[in-house]
Structures are given as C-alpha cells and as structure tokens.
Length: 455
Image (cartoon, rainbow, N blue to C red; front, side, top):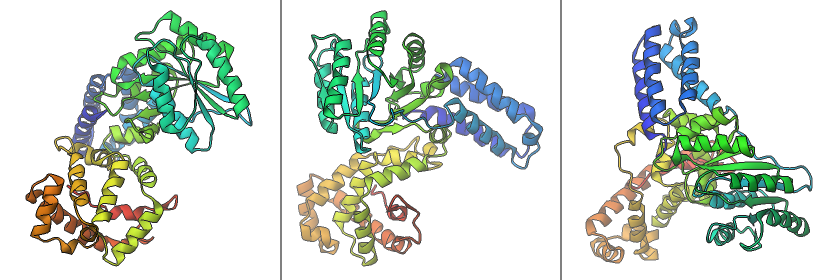
C-alpha cells in the first residue's frame, strides 16, 4: 500500500519524541533529520522536503513547544499541520458552470496513467449526484481507446459520443458540445489522447481543443507509481497547456507516495481525486487532512464511515438489529456482513483506516480470500441450516465440506468463528438503535460496532 514505508519510519521518529519528557533543540533537529530522510526515500521532491523541514523546525524549536507540558506531541502536531498545508489544507471540488451552461472537463495525461478509466469513473459519480454527463472519445490514435471508453461508459450507465478514429480530435470535441446541447447533457468529459512521453504534438492538440471549445476545467491524470516523474509531468502540462487540478491514480499500488506530497507545492494546483482501486467508489475525493492522518499512522475514520454508509443498506442494518435483539442472527446475516466488508474495499483496507492499526498490519498477512471460502461453505448449506445454525451436526458438516471443497477442520473453524461472532453481537445488540451509535446520513454507525471480522 502507498506510504507504508514512510508511515513506519515516521512512527518510529514520533515514538522517540514521545519517549522524551523534555525536548532540546538538538532533539528536534535530530528528529527532523530522520523525517527528511524518510520523505526523500518516499520520493518527495527534494525542494519540497527542504522547505518543509525548515518550516517545521522553525516552529518546533520555539520556546512554547520545548517548554510545554508535552513537547513531543506538539512537534507531531506541527508536522501534521505543515503536511496538510503542503497538500493544500482544504479539499478542492470540481467547478461547474452555473445554470444551463454546459460544463466541459478536458481530461489530459500520459498513456497508461488511467485517464480513460478515470474519465468514466468521474462520469459515473457525477451521474449518481444527479448530473447528466456525456463521455467523448477524442483519442483517435491508441488502438481500442474508443472501445475501452465505450465499455467503461456502459459500466457506469453513461453514453459515449464517438465519431470513430478518422476524425480530428478538435472537430470531435466541437461536435460533442452540439450533441450535448441537443440532447440535454449538462457535463461533457473529453477523453483526450495520451502519449508514452510528453511531446509537442500532444500539447498542441490539447491547446487547439481548448481554443475551439470553452473548457471549464483541464484535469490532469497522473500515475502515482511513477513518483517524481508524475510531478515533472504535472509541471510540464501546467507550463505548456495549463491545468486546474490533478487526479492521482494507482495510489493503492506499491508506490512510495511522494507525488501526493509534492504536486501541490511544485505546480500550485490541487489534487482533486485519488484512485485507490478499480471500482467506481475507489476514485475518492482528496482530503489533505485525511491523507495526512493516514500517512502519519493516525487512521482515516471519516473515510471509513463514508465507506460504511455507502456499503450498508439502512433497512438491512435495521433488520439485523432486530434479529440481534431476538438472538436470531444466522449464517445468511453472517454472509451479508462479509459482503458489506467486501464493498468497503476488503479487510486490509478497513483495518488500515483505524487509528494505530497501520504499523500493526506491517507483518500481518490479511487474507481476504478467506472470505471466499466462508462464502462457499455457507452457500453449501441448506436454507434451514443457514437460518438455524444449531442444526449443524458432524454429518451435515461433512456434506458442507464436500460441497465447498474444503476440509472438515475448516468447516469446524468457521462454525466456531460464527458462534463467537453471534455471542459478541448479541452483547453488542443493546448498544445499537441509537444508544451506542452515532447517527450520520440515516445510518446508525453503532451497528458497525458489532461487526466481527471472520478470520
């Protein structure tokens, strides 16, 4: 996962700071040397690192910090504040034209950054918010680029405007605006061509499109896994074409994450979204404060809450609560909870958002495939066995093992885990329904408190 190494190194630095009752200026400077080394290893732009370390050090060696009651915590607080400032402090939204005027987003970026997929994801999210988006295939060079956009558009239920690969992209862009006006679309997303490297013909084409069409915002899509190259690409696009914001893709991959910490400072342009996976919901709005918390190992509870709200059906949660009160929790309910975990991105992703869990997960192999085995076992049960777990005797368990392609030991282990979950959730039942739950958006988050992860 992104930032794993950086998070681990920073947490070691913070642990040493907290262990000291009093801090000297030398202690702070030594800690900042470690922070500097960690940031450079994470591929953060060296000029950005130099400025960041100087700002933090200047603030941290102040008399109020060094003589305070908890100087270690004060230094950590300063690091957090300055890291947020580095990434923009506030969340930046997409800009839409007022009234009936069509909003046009020009999507730019190098080939392989995930521009076409990201364009479709944005269209899908805007559709969910009540907009009427139109995807436009302006990449007439890359083989199957138009087909890829059509496939992705279909997944999101968003139409794609195409004139084939024989037309000039500028003419396609102009024709798409007329098509949008005639058919009532209020957002046009232009998926333009990329190249393996920045070249003048690509920049000229983007400039020509911007001159021919009234573009509301130019959004650059960059691959976070390319590290400082992503920052350099962003700077070049800003200088040559002009951009209004950046989307970082593949931040869930094996990346050091330096681009996320450098792009705003180098280009002056905000990060709008980050891509954390292949699903529609994996394109997440970028919150500098939440990202900082994750980098520093403080978790990201707000994003976890939002994932829970999107994954859990309110009526289903209410019905589960009633079952818990009546001690009727069965294997179908167990299965439903596992599927909700999958919707939220998997167990490893959920645990990484809990404060303090990041470092503990470093040497733990969280195997989400264990859920697939449990699903297979439950699907191998009869409806009566799912609703009445007490029916499961050795003979039935043997049949379930054969049906799921697992051993009888695995079935026994799953049954034991289920019983532990049922007992715990019965105890948690009294905390649900408003007493122990914080309500947000109509979903009682107390219900998540009873969730027992089945492995």
